[in-house]
Length: 255
Image (tube, rainbow, N blue to C red; front, side, top):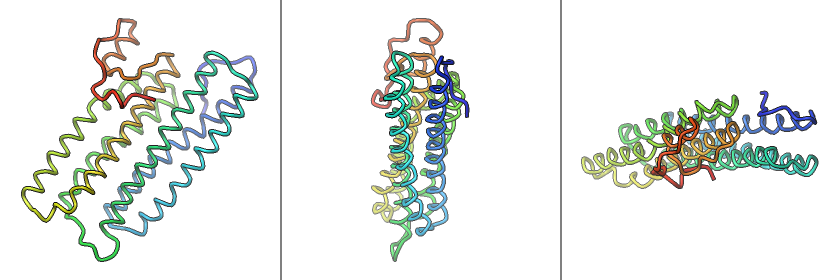
């Protein structure tokens, strides 16, 4: 992966920055793979595989530490200023979101353990269907965010922000559908809290994907788009005054 927003006089700086970015890209695809594997373990009712996925989260944590160490060394060795320093710090924010996204995937694997380990009576397929629907939505967001990061693609990053603007609506629609299962069959009550927590974990995974898209825009265009809706970001990038509309999920902006 070649990651550069500009060519520096000290070529070694570019090389080291690319090394950090390559590790970030690796970490991102690992987090996405963790979610997909967690969903597969749930679909296959495989508690043993879910335990292995939970243990595998250590790989994400190890990359988190490794990247932080490289960032610290890069700052200490090169003493970057202005734009170079902002780029490095933005990479650190991407890493923080990926580490938290990885934590959310563990919660999905935990559902598999809770539902299918031991003698517990698992929920029926219909009540789990919305988990997979929500998961497809946020997997698409993270995949697009990682592609935007790899190519510093602002247009693709804005598309992720648009998906992020609809994320809360997806979450609420899912809750409404789950409520109908509870009303139709009281035996589903025991699963409701666990499944809602799983849906919320997927929602947070999507929030982290959206945050990463915001960081990409900062890296590529130098614009801080925290707390702005996708429409406002597009106005800003088009050179027009941003719409006076805050993102309805203001806490979902990159932090």
